[in-house]
Image 1: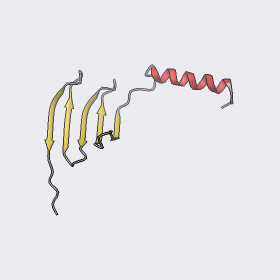
Image 2: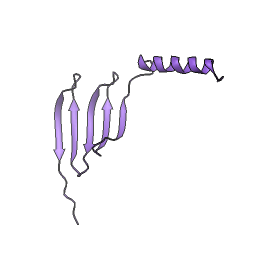
Image 3: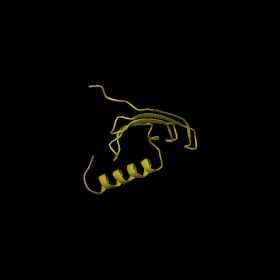
Image 4: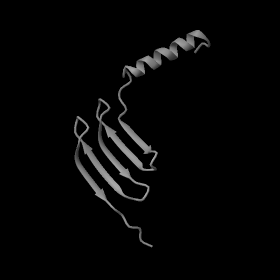
Length: 84
C-alpha cells in the first residue's frame, strides 16, 4: 500500500467499516479480565454474550448461560479444593 494520504484514507475507511459492523461481530473471547479470572465467552451473531465459562483467581469455576437480552437463564458454580 502506498504511504501518505492514500494509506491514511484507506485506514480510516477500514476503521469506519469496522465501527458499522461490516466485518461481523465478536463471537469468541478467550482471555482474562482485571480480576485475573480466566474467561471463555461465546456470543451470538449479533455479538451478544450467550455463554460464559469462568475460573476465578481462587479456583472457583462457573458457567453462565444468557438469553438474548443478556439476562442469566442458567448458572452453574463449583468450588474446587486443591488436594495436596
